[in-house]
Length: 101
Image (cartoon, rainbow, N blue to C red; front, top):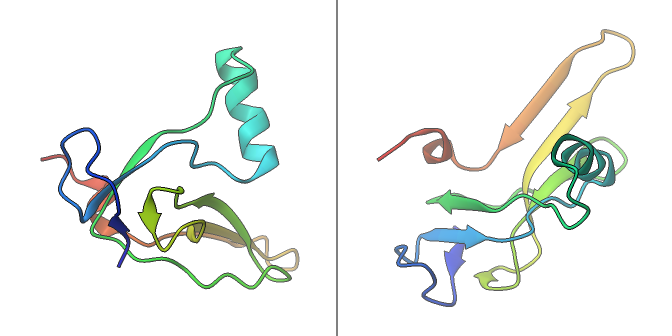
């Protein structure tokens, strides 16, 4: 479970605000190209989720927890691509991230 170490922006401790969440350079380059802002990065609220164990030789971590969450700097989302079957899998450690309360 990812929890917030600092009460920030009024969220519950199990709902972490993660600033500068993108750690994948390719995804970050796409955000900069789309917005035109070189300082652009993704800010997310990560509710009631867990961290992922990502093997770097198999998958790529795309977003990570910030310095104000525990555990800090852990992958929250990852992408896997299979060259042979052209299959793709995107994993996010929180199903609540797609709900809107």
